[in-house]
Length: 391
Image (tube, rainbow, N blue to C red):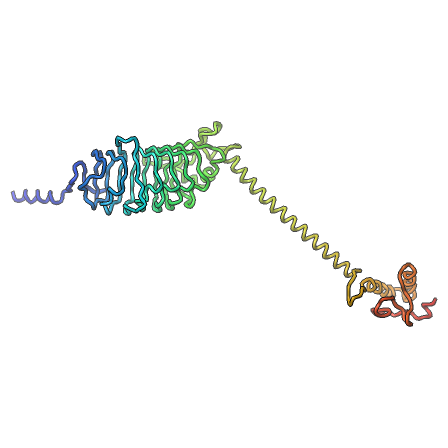
C-alpha cells in the first residue's frame, strides 16, 4: 500500500501538468518546452500557459489576427505556429509594430491564414526571425518595407499566394537570406538588381509563375545563366535542382518554353543582349574615334613644329638686336660654301650678278659688304683682291 502511494505521488510530481484544457505540454525535437493547442477552437492566446514555454502550437484554431502583445508574457518564446486558422472573418491580418516586442522569436508560421496584405514593418516586432512561413495565403502585393528589420532571416516562404509584382527593394533588408520560395504566384517579371546586396541565394524556388519572356525579364535570364544550380523545385521534403522550371507564359511563341532557352527579338537573348551589345559597341566606337583624333592632332603639331624648325634653320627671320639678319646669314653661308668650292672669283661674280638682279653688293669705305650689315663680309668670308674683283 505504501509503495503504491509513493509511486502515485511520483507520477503526479513528474508528469506534465497542463492548466489549459485543449493544450498538451511536452518537448520539441530540440528539447524545448512546448504547448500544443492544435484545433482547440481558440480565438486568441488562452490564459494559464506557462510563461517559460518556448514553443507554442496553435494550428487550425480561430485566430483572426496576430497581436504581438498577446505573446509578450512568453519571454523566451522561440517558435509560434498559427498555421491554418479559419476565423469567421473574410480575411486575417498582421498588426505591425515598431517595437521589438518578441526579441527571442526565431520561427513564425502563418501559412493558410487568408492574409491578403502585409503592411510596412509587419514583422518588426520580432527582429530575430530566421524562418518565416507565409505560404497558402491570398497576399496580392508587397512593399519595399514589408520585411524591414529582418536582418537575420534565412528562410522566407511566399509560395501559393497571388503576388503579381516583386517590389524593387523587398530583399534589401534580408542580408542573409538562403532559401526563398516564390513558386505558385502570379509574378510576370523580376526587377533589375533584385537580388542585391546578396547576389547569390543558394535555394531559390521560382516555378509555376506566368513569366513574360520579353526584354523585361533580362535580369532574371542573366541570373539563371550564372546561378542555374541554385534554382530548385520541391516534391514534399525532396528538393531537386531544375533551372528549366522557370517557364515562359508569354509571348505566345515562347509559351511553355524554359526561360533559359528562349531566343528571338522579344526574348532576353534577343533584345536584352543586343541592346547591351550595342551599348558596348558604341562605347568602343567613340573611344576609337577619340584616340584617332588625338593621334591626328599630335601628328599635325609635330609637322608644324618640324616646319618651324626647318624654316628657322634654313631661312627664317631671326630678330636680334633690333635687326633682321636671317636672310643675310643664309646668303653668306652659301657664299662661304661656294667660295670654298670654286674660289673667290666665281663667288664674287655670282654676287655681282645677284646684285644686278635686285640684290645689292658694293664697296663702301674701302670694304666689300652688304649694305645694312653690321660688318663687311661677316662670318669669316674675306673679299677677293681689288685686281681680281675688277676683272
